[in-house]
Image 1 (tube, rainbow over the protein chains, first blue to last red):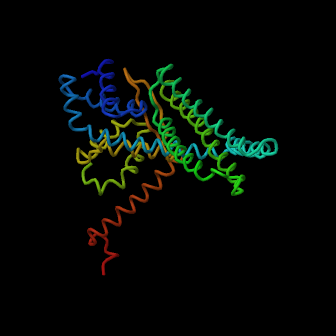
Image 2 (image 1 turned 30 degrees about the vertical axis):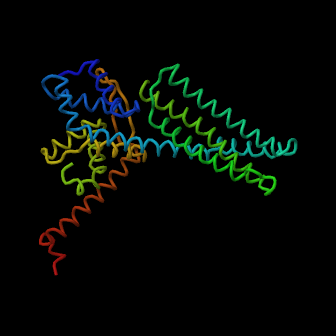
Image 3 (image 1 turned 180 degrees about the vertical axis):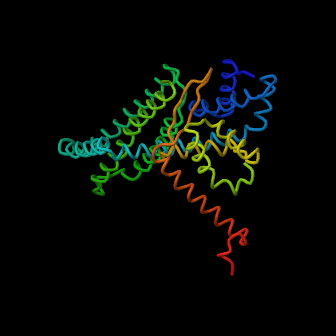
Length: 209
Length: 115
């Protein structure tokens, strides 16, 4: 049988509803299912139902493993970027500026500046997501989304830990470590945004030409 | 996959060998090729094939090309330069493994190893 355009959309929608949320994974799975169905004769929906009864578990299993591999690849790329000249320059400049800032403002203001930076970066990430999801109506790509998920999770916990640890840094003389710690976090957030953009460009080039 | 525990460790080598012979292939094509070569004895499931392909891609051993075929996108895999070198190594390892297994399972075949 020949699988039509609408039937391709049906397969894609079915996979999305079944939990295969990333577009790059669905492209490959949709082609796999459609090719398998094209080798069969009979009604599309009957054959599709039979195929899914036999293979759905395997497809979902493959989806989970693919998501993990995409996450690991994205994290690896983030580390490569963090250790690149650009990444080290960002972290180094941030650290240098913060230390220079200590000569012109008190420590509380530096802390305030860091939290303001977080706020701005979170706004950038939210804006990035809204722009791609709501305005450009783009679907999710596995590596980009997984990276955002992992980094957001880690940063939330690191910030909670940081607030408690460095509540009164002046009393404990921890200025150096506090600034180092904050610079690392800010650098990770900045490089996550850069890596996400890099990944998104790669996905678009690969799948959209 | 039939006898999955026995075949599992060789899956990536099987994929690489097929890609070495056929240039570039897509997922479903690989499953069908394996099925046809083994006359239906070995069936690679989606749950085993795609993670193996993505792992090899992540390791830089496979390259990906996406093309529009009919009304959908198709992802083709092919060996990279590193992948080609690695295929030679893995096939040599697999052959050595099979030879050792044969010796262990059927020692009479190799008279040198008989006591």
